[in-house]
Length: 346
Image (cartoon, rainbow, N blue to C red):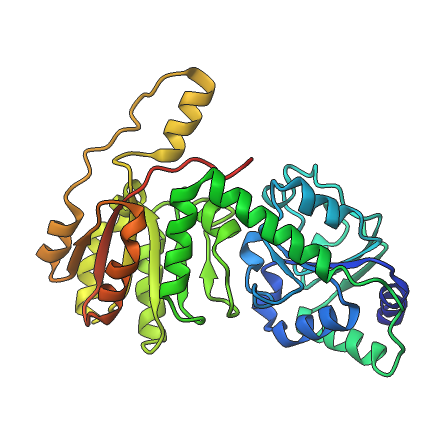
């Protein structure tokens, strides 16, 4: 079956790769990058698959493709899709409306997920790293199919879509770009609440397993305790919790844990004094708001009361200097940023 899959990929004229969280669980990052470069195939990811390959690589699409017709077209026009470590779940496929290539090679460690949501021409049950290594062994020494590269088209699409996003949503896009610029390539980011949808699409990830999203359940309040755990495990890496004010209120007392553990994480709060997602749905569906405004506290004062640092900026455009100061602090630091969001769909 590996031999048959290798033959299909080698013959493909327009191959593409679709990577999910299974690539991180298996640690198959070097293998998927080598295979992408051998095939000259663009790499699309689920939200939890971000960082499968560095997102500044010329073949990286990341999770940016969701909701972007031009990138969805690039995916659908591929003749063979190699899907690795993904269930093709509802959230990542627009309730299974995503137009996929007819020829799919699907690799997953859970045999029950193969052919469950999407039929595969070849379904390989196995650890992603192991099976990708087997595919590379099969392809070694073969001549590369003389196909037209899609790198130039992909780069043009990315530049165009970046310009459109910056024009449509200047404040959140600038906020995320300043956050990315201020952090090391291997910084670990935990997101929850509405900002995770923006980060999944518009925050580039360069290192494996360095962005974590509660994508399936949308858990509020998860980013702070998980960031504390990551900082204890990786004290020499930058760790950021990126959340909304409503989400932070679920686990705000864990600031005491961060102080006690000397976990000098940075908590960036997108503060609109309410549940932004609930407001969005209520406005769209009913034209009114109920119980979605919050009496959130002064986060700077609360942080200082816990013995942490607290910084407040006047707009999302002022994040850069505050982030630099927070990363230089030896304490956990909360940065309170006024930023109201809706979903980043065009």
